Structure formats: C-alpha cells, structure tokens
Length: 184
Image (cartoon, rainbow, N blue to C red; front, side, top):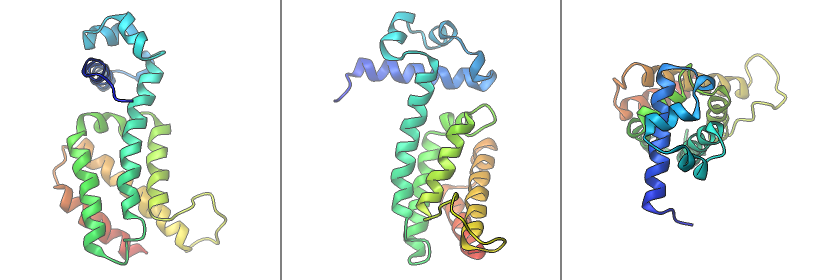
C-alpha cells in the first residue's frame, strides 16, 4: 500500500532525526522525546508510526537491507564470468551508498547496530554464494577465502564511509572486484 506524502515526510523526518542523534550519542541513550524534538514531530505522531525507537531503527535498517540485497543479488554469478557487469553492479551499490551516506556512515560505524552490520555481511556472503556456517576444511578452502574477502570488503566500505567517500564508486567497485579475484 502506498504511503501518503505526509506519512513519507514524517517517517523521513524521524529517520533523519534518529541518524543525527546517533552521530553524537549511543542509540540506547536516545529518548523518544529527544528524537521528536530533533525531528520537530509531536510524540503522539511518533507513536502513530512506530511502537518505540527500536522499531524506527529496525525500519531504517530493513529498508537499507532490502535495497542492498536487491543490488547484491545482481552480482550473484557475475564475479568471474563478466568483470564489467560485476563492476557495474558494485558501482551501482556504492552509488547508492553515496546517495545515502548520511545514514550509512552512522549505520556502519561503531555507533551502528552490530546485528545490522552482520546482516550486511551475510547478504554479501549470499551474493558471493558463500555459506559461512558450512563445514569446511581449513585453512585454504574457498569458503574461508570468500569470507575473508567479504569481511575485507565490508571493512573497506566502513573505512570509505568513515573517511569521506574519497574514492569514486567506480574506483571502489574496481578495487573490491580486483582484490576479490586475486584472493579467489
């Protein structure tokens, strides 16, 4: 069901307020009153949309994960077959991150929810056809190398977001693609 413009505006104002507050204080220290003041939204309006601030944070994270999974799904199977298609999909993924960097810089930082960050990791694993829980023979199996690459990729993205998005999405996509293939 399509949301009204007013609902969309309210939800965006609350999400923006939450991210702004998370820049300066831990999530578990943020109150609904403080959030409503920051977003210039009435408390009763907040409760019309969300049960509590955890529901708001989960909504922000779920929206982000849905898009990430969609783009990462396009990568599945393209890593070795077609460099340009894989780099293009990665580039599109990083362009999304640039467009939403004010959210992602917080969500992927130390202030963010570690459970969300793990979901990002598992989504990336699925896109690369990795099953991190699978039984494998250490130390040099394909699973271990790919888990290493995905964790490294997540680390690179966290660094990129934290340090001002200095590389272009294309440069980051090519770097991660080339590093991935060099380890595989």
